[in-house]
Image (cartoon, rainbow, N blue to C red; front, side):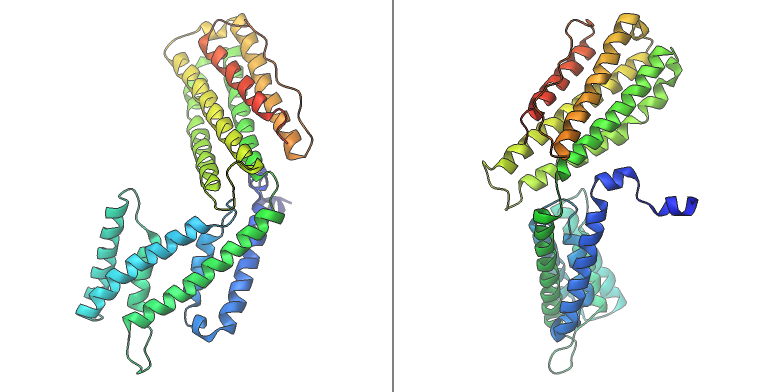
Length: 341
């Protein structure tokens, strides 16, 4: 039984459409393998076809066009640098080290925060998997042509499968991610409330240590929504775009509430004990209930049940600024969810 439970995806993975992503990957590799085996020219470089396809398969985006174009751009950069140096210096361990380092250098010049794995892979590929021309001689140009052809086909297959799944396979995928954020925030707030209610203020540093993961998840999901909004299939003014704008605002409110809770714990570590007062705890409990109700609103949307009611937060529960800010965020998010469908 324990072994079986280890093989079952956890709740977070299921919430993030992991099963659909696995099916999408299976179909993409299957189609890519069939195409590569049927076309002799592509079969010379199945690695690029399948590798490029896997980097373009997206768990969220509708087509993956942006990631596919980035791959092609990085491949051209790596190929030009590597091909030029190989043509001048020939093939040797010294040249391999030089071409990879030069490609890495240019990649960092373009974006110093991270290097392009695809560009570096292209450089390594052109040093190792060398193609020959019609005369049977090693050819940088032929290597580049085969690499680009296989990569392009892999990217196109991934884009088509991304699109098919975005139409038929995913429902409310971004809303599920926001629900995950709200449930996580609710869990963190429950820990904060328990700490204050039991006056175990020494727990504050441990609770604070659990917040960075939530901050990272909020930022990751927000960047996912921003990428989704740039997808060519999302038209300006469409219903989908309106929903995306609402989701972006909800992620911003969720981040603000997360920051408020983190700041509250920080103030506790600095000796502010008034958070244990009865009035504040009453206010906090009702605010926590407001976050829970937001999650229920979003769950209704995910299950295609229309949401018309709003979460109404009682006024004047506490003069504490943090609670007023929390309640304002809850009210704004609830208003965004009203008549969402």
